[in-house]
Image (cartoon, rainbow, N blue to C red):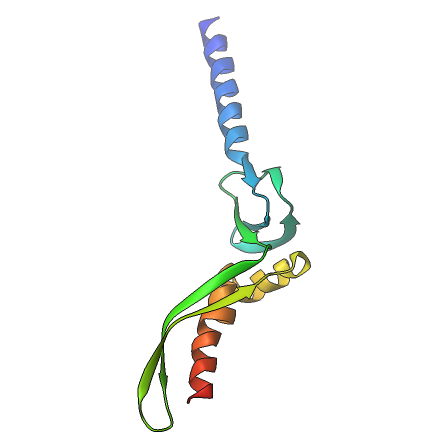
Length: 129
């Protein structure tokens, strides 16, 4: 009898732990993207409570509302050979929900590093003064 009580208790505890680990929340203004075994899944979820397979599936939130990225200390050389520095350049942007999967697949969740931070440095230096 004690063995069965222990077994049932262990199973219930394991079920509660696994179920609790599988739940996660996607906040308002974000969507959820998922990886299973390192491969990006085409599933993009809206805000709310969702479940995933613990340990095998991981997720990240991607912001789909307007955001402002600030790029600081941008050096720029002039045509006369003088170096100047822009203290801060701010870029306002928004990733459309229907483009999240393609963007993350091509550029990772840090897409703004490629498309904003690196691009601002490049464009400022292209303009030159």
